[in-house]
Length: 87
Image (cartoon, rainbow, N blue to C red; front, side):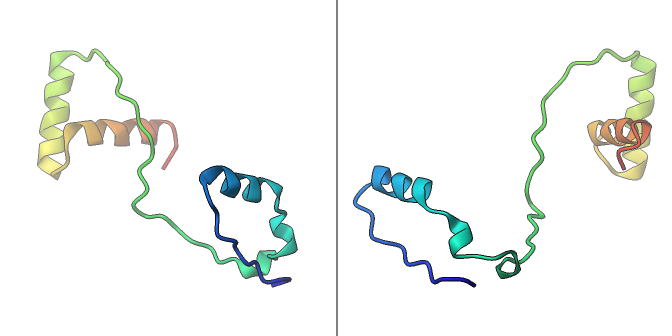
């Protein structure tokens, strides 16, 4: 660590915003000061879509999903991800 960063008491948000806008954090921290973190519960944003499927296909999807114990929309997402080589 280079220097100790002492935070002043801010009177309002504008004063705090000005403080952070005008400070150079490289004067106080080095890359070795930081630790890697993970956010396992962070939700990836998603957007609902409409898709038309033949009823027979949808019935088979629901049966397959039920047999493996997952919701059918989750199974559809897995199939799409596999088709796109996402994971």
